[in-house]
Amino acid sequence: MGKPVVYGADYSVYVRIVRLALEEKGIDHELVPVDVFAADGIPGWYFEHHPFGRIPAFEHDGFRLFEASAIARYVDEAFDGPALQPADARPRARMNQIIGMLDAYGYRAMVWDVAVERLEKEPPDQARIAAGLSQAGKVLRTLSLLKSAGPWLLGDELTLADLHAAPIMGYFLKVAEGRKRLAEFPDVQGWWDRIVQRPSFANTEKAG
Image 1 (cartoon, one colour):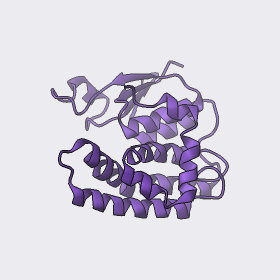
Image 2: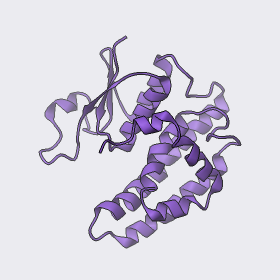
Image 3: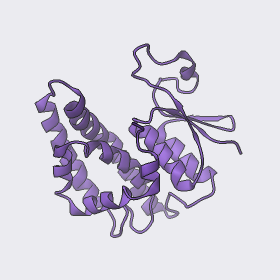
Image 4: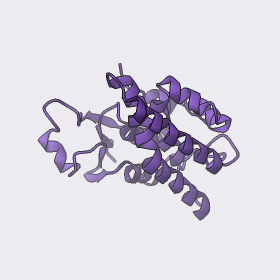
């Protein structure tokens, strides 16, 4: 099989989710840069890979996918390496619940309303940050309640839930308010301290 291709930008949370899955499976891949925020707009050729012009998109031996969760599941199922999804129905459902919860309630609040607003806006919208932090607290509390005993979110085995949460958390923790909020949940803090030590996390850090 040929080397899989990921289209996107190394700053993207969702591109990183896909790349983490590939790294954990031990699969070499190519990252083709696509900057959806470029001044001259999204390149026209990219809409052949993603009709909505979002990132990431993915290609493997002529098979194309978009949507990070679909890509990550394909990576787990199509390639050899450690399984990243539980075999049993209930833990697999819990994994999918955590991923869905982070997408629906965590990503925008933690990344855009807190981290991007604080780091990139001048002046930042303090009300938006406060609302984001409140929502982030609910997400972290829920994650703490859903987390199984053990080092990872579902217990002893790393899964796609961990790989989905890590890039979102990484952005959130770029700001002091995020670090302070995470410290209120020691079990999630411990999970974070472990996942940042994985080679996959270092290998997918944004360059520069």
